Length: 257
Length: 257
DNA sequence: TCAAAAGTGTTATAAATACACCCATGC
DNA sequence: GCATGGGTGTATTTATAACACTTTTGA
Image (cartoon, rainbow over the protein chains, first blue to last red):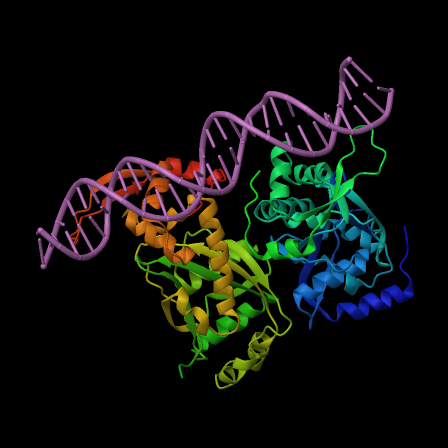
């Protein structure tokens, strides 16, 4: 089992004095890899469990700011817009069942006790462009990876619930605004975008109708036929009209599918 | 200024040992009095401010359970379904500006200090039938009343923001499901229901279209013409078809106006 | 008989839905 | 040429919105 360095322990001990007690934040970050909707998960140094990124709030820190900081510290993912999707606080929500794993570490008993308390967590979610972002975690985590949302039911604590709740909110957002172009890389094709919608909504949508409605919104600029070698007819490549896209975000647009 | 009794102080002191630190819950309860959308507000014994009902979470208590308990303790309002509408936690969110009022009381300094800390609050909202419910507050509050949501911009702390955020969520709910029949008394007329919709949405809706869509949902049972003395043509009285109403809650119905 | 509010119907427009059909490509 | 996925058009149905007409009542 990986050991903490002395510096890490000192750093943890110092930080814990400055955190708000029994309050945590968790972040569900969605990305679309072209085929599947995915979220990053991390593995703490001292326990063989997978969780979504999360952390604590400093006593003098806004919770929104804390959410951004925590996400960056644990995944190096930055400049994303985070939105709340709910706060979770059953009385028995704690790490009690994982405490044994921590006991074998060199962590001071105070820290173990602190971590073992009941925590109320505030859930934040965000969506990411398809830029190939590497997750680099902080020294507190030994591992990280992207998983498909469908495979998120093995996460520890109530983190599977957090992912599914975040996804529900994402679904609603997707239908009320074209917001989800945020997911896409600088240039993309309409069939690609359709796959994104289908993987979020979890059901197929009509090809012809999808294309019409997306184009009617006038937010796509045609670039030309794809240069990539495709086995079939090459799809048309578009890019986002950022001005029109940003304008649309302020209004409440219906995009029923 | 009203004084606390010794028993009250003892009770407060005892309770504060068992609360989760720096975490609070606030409840926005909506009712419709036939003309206006209203919310109850309360006035703490030791300060001349008005706030929405709120309190703290016991260490061994689910936050959802705490929300129900807090609402009941402070207003005697029971058996309502509470839903979260957001969690609020700016770093400077505290009662600092009201501490002077508390200092003049016989409250122990520890309690004043505890209350003066920064608090993260979880917002819950609910809707009430039009049964004439009297607000009876706990001994910690000297006053309470219903106010129109339009007049909620003078509340202390960030409670005006809480009310407006809760109302936004209520608006969205109203359009996605016929949920809001919860507001109405056992029997009511369609013009009355329309007033409810208009006061929540904050804009007029077409009379004829409203009637058609509500009736098309088939959730209303005709009782007969109103027996009340009206100055004009008496409206038809309906009651809710509870079975069909409950069925509709599970689906996602569009009720665009 | 008139004003006002309640109840009902009509029509125009737009949106959602379900397809059918053609096109470009590699094999 | 044909299977496959991409691109386009159209017809049907349904929802939305605007508004006109009728009914009932008290004054």
